[in-house]
Image (cartoon, rainbow, N blue to C red; front, side, top):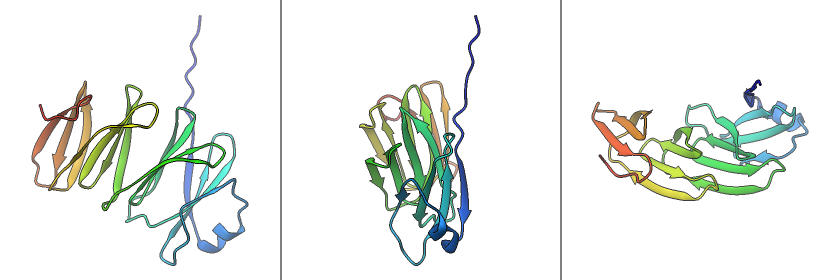
Length: 163
């Protein structure tokens, strides 16, 4: 009896605006603006999606979760079905750094906030902070946050409360 694990591969490449205009994307995420950065997102299925957004210097990242494309780009966190229909979008005043999939939930981290979404992309809790979040890591069911001033905060993963 063998179990095979597959990693869903998504490639994100920055391209020029003129290259972006030449592609026949399955769908495009984001609106046109003169200050955008442009990206080509290639899914494991060879489908190509366009992304036009302001990045704030942080490269977008994406993953397939619950058969949906989840993506952070600049100050937006997107959830799309694989046919291009938007399921949910969260916008922040700050740049999103990362998301962490853990225990069938998604922990989303921006410069000044974190929030947890369940498997169905419903927000379970959210926390805002006064200092810039520098690092986030999981330690069992605790979230360890280090802010820019090196202060450490421990958060319960399921409730969002400090422990």
